[in-house]
Image 1 (cartoon, one colour):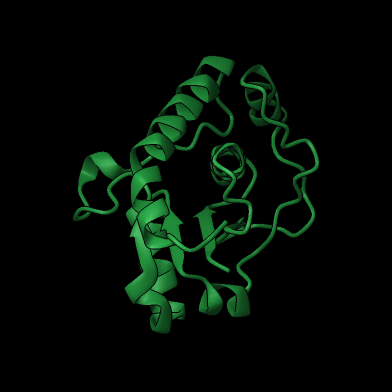
Image 2 (tube, helix red, strand yellow):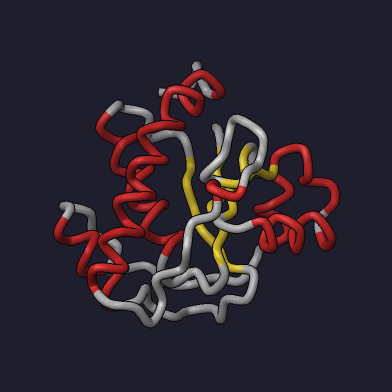
Length: 158
C-alpha cells in the first residue's frame, strides 16, 4: 500500500485541506488503497482544523470536520513513500530531524520538478475567508497537477 504524508506548520489549515482534496480525488479514481495523512512540524495533537478551512472544504464538497491535528510521527514519516511540505523551511526542518526521509521529501507546490520560490503555499491562518478560498484553490490546483505523477508512482494500487 502506498503512503503519502502532507505537512504544514500547525496541521490545522493547509495540510488538512490538501489531505482532503487528495483523498477525494484518489477515491473518485478508485485508488483508496493509497493512504493519505497529514501532520504539522509545530502541531499540537488533537486540535480541529480551523473553522475557515472546514467551511471552505464544505463549499467544495469535502468534509474535513473530523480532522485532528498531529505533530510529526517519526515512524509514519519513515514508512511513507512521499512527504509533501508547504514551505522550504518545513522541508529543512524535516531534513534536519529525519535525514533518512530526504529522498522522499518534496515541496508540494514544485514536485516533481525542482524546488522554486513559487512552490511555497502561503498559510491562510488568521486570514479572511477569501484567503482560505485562495489557499484551497492553490492546493486543489496542485493536487490536479501532481495526480498523474502520484498515479504513476503507485500503479498497482487499486
